[in-house]
Image (cartoon, rainbow, N blue to C red; front, side):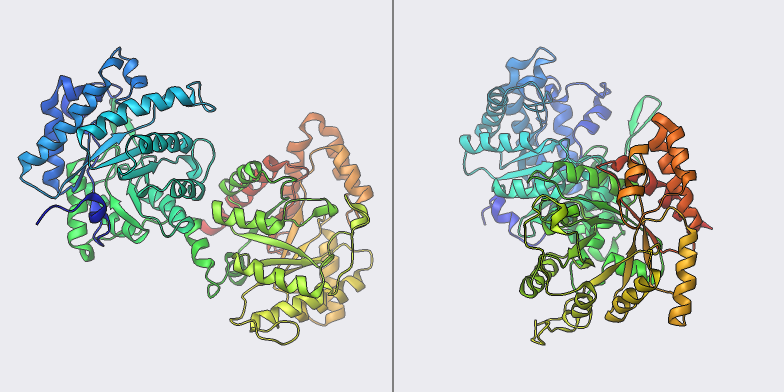
Amino acid sequence: MSKLTFRERLKQTTPILADGAMGTMLHQESHARADACFDAMNVDAPEIVLAVHKAYIAAGAELIETNTFGANSHKLGNIGRASEVGAFNRSGVELARLAIAESGRDDVYVAGSVGPLGSGVYPIGQVSQAEAGGAFAEQLSALVYAGVDVIVFETFSEHRELLLAIKVLRDIDAEMPIIAQATFYQEHVSFSGYPPARVANDLHRAEVDVIGVNCGSGPAGIAEVLQQMTYAVPEATYSAMPNAGFPEVIGGRILYPASAEYFGDSVAALVDFGASIIGGCCGTRPDHIAAMRAALDEPAAHYVDLHVGDYHVQHEEHDPDHPTHLAERLQDGRFTVTVEMSPPRSYHTEDLLREARQLRSAGADLINVADTPAARMKMSAWAAAHLLQSQLGIETVLHFPTRGRNMLRVQGDLLASHALGLRNLFVALGDPTRIGDYPDASDVFDVAPSKLIGAIKQGMNRGVDMAGHSIGKPSSFTVGCALNMAADDIDREIRVLRNKMAAGADFALGQAIFDPRRIHRFHDRYAELAGEPFDLPVLMAVMPLHSMRQARFLNNEVPGIYIPDAITERIAAAGDEAASIGVDIARELLEQMAGLIQGAYIIPSRGHYEQAAELVAYLKEREAEADSN
């Protein structure tokens, strides 16, 4: 029976086991410096390279990579050997083939390893597209003509360079199988700030055989990236090759902490997250691969929970049968921190995603996405919220104004939101068009916020629309309403609020308060009028002040906001330190509100997200301290 082609083998259900680190082993066996050119050993010390290949085959690897990761003219030029690109790559393939022959195995495939040029391709670096293409073509031609079974592009932290290399290979050999592996570092974004979902989509469009992730982190971090990729493009085939944890330098040596046993126990989770090819990267050795082989052969005996992060939760929560993250936090009484973001005034979303990553990294539980705030033209709030959830994995609260929508559009928009996984809503009237960009735009609405809350909670969440017609499966929205605890006519505010609560509101977003005594006044008056304590969860708006100009504007021009003189005097006296003092004031206010609110709804002023991130980090530290006690 003839050996299956690589693509035929890839279609089988059993995952393919690749080898581990080449550089780690060559460094160990040759005692060369960690930054030495190991590709040159294909010619200078072939016996060491051959021994490493044979060790991985003996450990159970079914796919071995040639020792050619950096065998391109740019990297070899640094050691004065750019003219030997062809020799190093051909020798790399020959050594891999020799190792397979001497092992007596007939089920091992050779992957031609190609890494980034290491010089930065324009616009990231100074290497032109044409020059980079030429360098890739030289290396890839040598590998293809030497007879590899598949090309593995690996450790590309800039995926546009990876796409260029793929295009070059297609021009050389349109039929060559491709494994395209990207690398992500802090916050699981590429060097240019692209999230795994975007990279996976771009590679899928490039029609590679396998989309993968390697290097950058250990099995847990790789699993998180893999999950985001598979969620974005579930129909693709994936590979995962983690490092042996994060490296440490001890006694001048680079050491990796992850044991072979841990790697073996990680196999099942990586496969569960979608990997069809698994292997190891930096720090892994033949014993790691042997442990992975044993785990593949006896999966029931090996398992470890890799503790993936928020994106795993988000993936499950897209299932309408699963409560949203917000609903769970409200149910559990956990203090929730959310930050308002405004969609961009264009179709460019890079800044939005970058700022949201900053907030997520600080610890924000959710992002509130405003819909045409101040009646200004902005990108659709649905689109912005969907991008944040699908690309960053952070759950959102979609602002849903009734103003400007008739009854047909309201319900259609709600169905669309649910289909996109946007199941947390903040229902409000919205800002009048007369104050915004288009004062003559239609300002009509068919349904008031309290009525819409009822239509959602008592209608759609039970499977019917406003006319009582079936919508099929019931929706599962969590719905918030607006609340101003410092309203001038507090009795009217309470009456309206009670209508919203009766309609089924799950929580309220409170208007910013700079004098917490007004919250006590609200609670007292509510109990008098309702005959019972106020118990609706409130995420109180907090607006970190950054200048005296902002404080004056809020105090004099925004209805419902009153800033005591003591606070404005502190901001005025702060001068250039006003933004820092503004965060301090926000912290103090939140401490004074403790026990009266169930969360913070941080509203940055004009893109001052660094203040919001600082405040988020403080609140999450306080939450962690409370949990530990």
